[in-house]
Length: 200
Image (cartoon, rainbow, N blue to C red):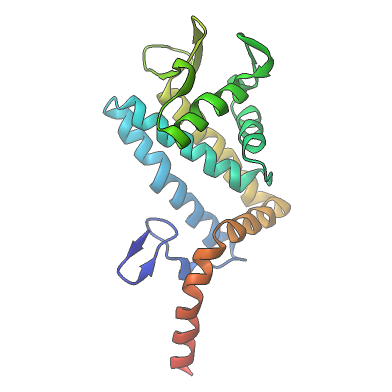
């Protein structure tokens, strides 16, 4: 996000303000990004009964968190892995295809459909009408975006606790952030150098 001359990592942290080895800076900045750009807007959409828009943002949140937290390069594998590891419902077998999990089906029909085509494939839907996170009804996969958002938020909370307390997890997290945002980091570097030169 760019405001004026500043490139923002999150609603409240500029890229130039990130301190890579400081947990008390980098972790709150990441929390601010995920809650400010993803989770809080999802809640706002769910509160206005905007199931499709909320669902789309849930999908992008999963995509982002899987990219940062798993260390897996292949998109489909990392998203399926993240879903199965963090939301137990998705680790179940697809009743319409015993050779795959609900995580794989969600990736194919929801994630790929929405990201590449702006629609859910194979008749899949978002709906608040079911009390379960995932329901397969007449061979169609239906996902409750409110329950999905709650599950994502809980998984995110657990990940943050791990990064705070586990040094290896923090170093992996830091490396992922630097790799994922390497272009943004390069963009702001010359400005830092110019400022330092003026101060000398």
